[in-house]
Length: 169
Length: 102
Image (cartoon, rainbow over all chains, first blue to last red; front, side, top):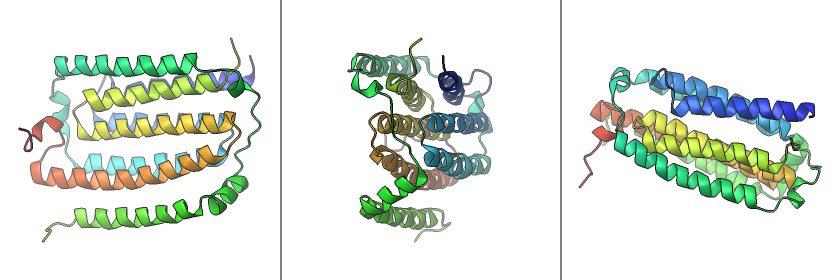
């Protein structure tokens, strides 16, 4: 077994364990714990991105997700007082039905993954996700979506400012 | 054990997606539902990056770049909505928000 494979199994296991702790932490139902485990999940996933030679995306993943998005989450969690959430009981019927439906989706998903054609995709990959080639592609073929994205960010910013105003008229 | 290929990454991505879906359906706290949504988006990102790597095309990574940006915008708007809701109703629990229920 190669070193890369060992790293893959370590990172994959860590990612899945941390993701389980985000949604179903047996010890605490505090949203802060979930947010912290989500940060760990994202960092481990950046490790998987590095194994896939997507170095720029790994950096962006840590900077944007772990750095910006999760800090925003933690700010909001601490802004809201969620003490009483921990005492709530989970409704058994709803949880059971939800688990069954998610199980059905999972069954379909994994059947497709494991039975789809294997040969071509397993050829030794050549692609290097270097930042310069990514940037060239972004500013040549995808320049219009990129500009539209800036508009989307502007709209989101205006929307957030409007939503957080105290007295809307 | 077989060398790590596309399927391995897709299985991890599928597991993450299902965990996120389970969180959205079963958990009733708005913030945790939101974090589960982020988990599902990340699972899609992982699938896209691995497809991009194993098909020798960089387009998938551009798509991931766009998804990360859209997710950041979505989180900002969604959290502002949650804060506005909390200010009005003093709760972040889905079952307390039944005003529009028939």
